[in-house]
Image (tube, rainbow, N blue to C red):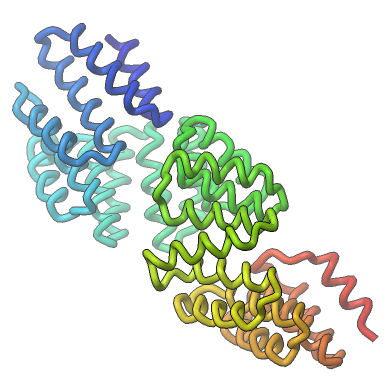
Length: 389
């Protein structure tokens, strides 16, 4: 029985939910009428349904657990986790209040409580619940993962990274721990290794494939980015972010019409998608359709004033098309809105150099080199500086 349940957990963690469910059906035949074993199996079955996004079957299974002898507290916790699947934090907390009244030292209930408060955007309570959970089971990686997420949202980034590192130390092959740590640290070899491990351990991990695909595009590894996009599409074929990644790969491969089409399809379903408008803009810019590109860049900026990418890309596209007055305007806006974003200063420097304003270009390039936010080709910028008259 222990071997069967261990196999099921491994299958579930790897995303092979159908096989995990089959193994639990087999385990049920071994359990007979032992109430403790039946409870363990039903709880694992509920987890399979929750991870598969099947609320109805998860809820029904949790109610079965609640009716089993001596399993009321576990049943309430299970129902709470099912409610969290639907983002119903208040209903989850109601169930957890009953669970914790019966079993105040329940690790699973405290963990679920932390997730519920995280969903309610109450980080202080979430942190308190998770730290209580860790006093009960300090060696459990999943509580460290959730606590790391909560601390990150609180702005305690170093503490968050420390918790996520602790999670990967406790369970180096936990795909969720690897993914959360990867997205918390800067791009680099460690981040790539963590994402590779997460997708290897769970081949259906769409979110990890998305991040890995975007990273591979940035590093120029286009064929590997295409593989990541294909894997993400198999895992979540209808996901908007997956369709955008597929479009970005198409753009990187020079298939601009496919890229534009992908962005336009997303805009049909999400009319204010800044990422989709940016993809369309980049596609038109690559084809030399500058007026259409500028229109799409302006739309992307209008949809999302929290990111500098549309302004920087617009400036670069205008400079490449010989419209340095427009390039300068976009560059000035980028540096005004995001003064610490190095790519904006590079774009402004290119525009000023194109207009023959040597001193201004020199200052913009020097400013870019002095900043640490945003990836730039530092050697390329130094060469531009040296080439100025």
